[in-house]
Length: 301
Image 1 (cartoon, rainbow, N blue to C red):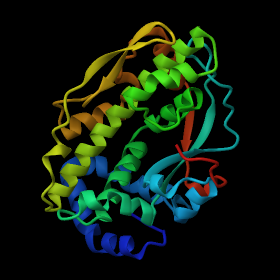
Image 2 (cartoon, helix red, strand yellow):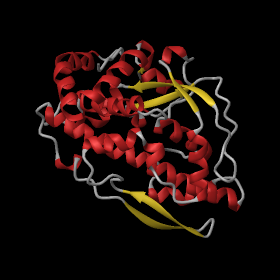
Image 3 (spheres, rainbow, N blue to C red):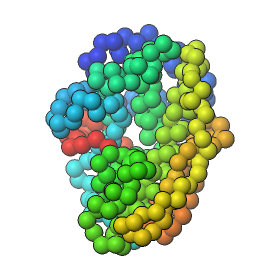
Image 4 (cartoon, rainbow, N blue to C red):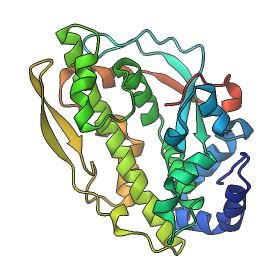
């Protein structure tokens, strides 16, 4: 487990020296039953083509100060994606999806100050991105795929959008008032999905590093409980409820993992648009493949 085929020797070295300790920490936190399928997915889905460096950002002209490390998913070229309808529905399609990582020196430099003093600045960011892969591996229909579909409709400048940016995102969207309302409701649903796995990822980061012996800051675990903030959207004269905080507040790591594994059935849409989207997403055929089975992705999500 925990491979890396990139060109940063410091990261390779720290993974080599911590791999056994990391494995035991994950086993202690998640249990053997969850570790086994992750091990298999690690072997099958991650290869030399799964790891990208600065050249990935340079190809798309991304500013060096924005080059954060990230986990992403890439879709096969034969995905028959026809777009979302105005009621949130779409034609379910069959697709191949490959997991990948962008890990760069710039990315590690961006986060170095935060980690300095309590954990190796190469180890902690890797664990965070690997935990995104872990969730992807354990979900039959990955949240990351749903997010990618939603983002293709919403077209935000960055994801997830900041609360202060939602009004301009909706206001600048080219479409009718009905279409803007659709985008607003799907944005909220996407933020709820994102917040659910991101809060789990952060808590899992902390638990794993604790088991490895690091003195993890309390902020890893003290995420405020979920709440919905009312936000008036002037462009559509509508109030939307924006989700913030820990979507699974109070749940144990293993309870969270069970919810994430079965998220399609367990997460409750709050309106017809979101229900229509999830009904169609439930019918999709998603095959997970290694990056080597796909051409170089056009963009990361």
